[in-house]
Amino acid sequence: MGHLEIVGYIAAILFVVFIVWRNTNKEREEKKAKEEVLKYSYKYPRMAMTVDAIVFAGESGSRMVLLIQRKFDPFKGLWALPGGFVGMDETLKTACSRELFEETGLTNITLKQFYTFDAIGRDPRHRTVTTVFYGTGDEKAKVIGGDDALLAKWFPINALPEMAFDHAEIIRRFEREKL
Image (cartoon, rainbow, N blue to C red; front, side, top):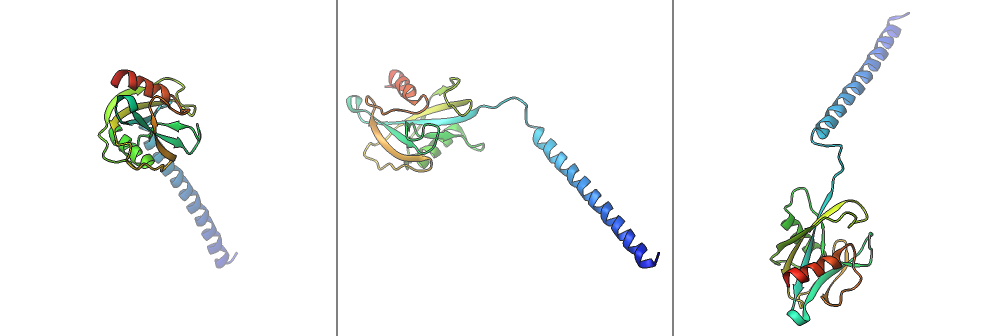
C-alpha cells in the first residue's frame, strides 16, 4: 500500500468522523432548542383568544350596528362582528382596535369592555374565548371590508342578517344590558 492510498484512507476516515460529529452536534443542538421551547410548553390543550367589536350608531328607534361579511370559512359569506385573534404582543383592547381597523377601516372609536363569552362550541374550529368591546360610531362614516372581511356594512339592530358564530346572541345580550 502506497503513501497516497494511506493518505486517501485517512482522509476518508476523517471525513466520516467529521460527518458523524457534525450530525451528532446538530442533533444535540436541535434537542437543546426543542427542550428550550418545551420548557415553557405544557401538554394541556390551549384555548384561542379573540376579540370582537360592537360598534353602534344612531338613536334608540333607528340604532344601527356595524357588521362584516366573512371572506373565509367557517361561516364564509355570513355576517359577523368585526374581530379576530389576539396577537401575543397585544392587549385585548389593542387587538380589538386593530381588528376593527383591518376589517372595516374605522379608527378613533373609543372602545369599552363589555363581556367575555366562553361557551364551549362557539367556534367550530377549536375552543375559543372572546372578549367583546363596544363603542359608538357614525353610520355615515365610510366603512370598507378588508383583511378577512368581504364587506363592512351598517345594519338596523332590529333587522340583523344571518350571523356567524354566536354573534346575534352577543348583540341581543348587549341590547338588554347596555342599550
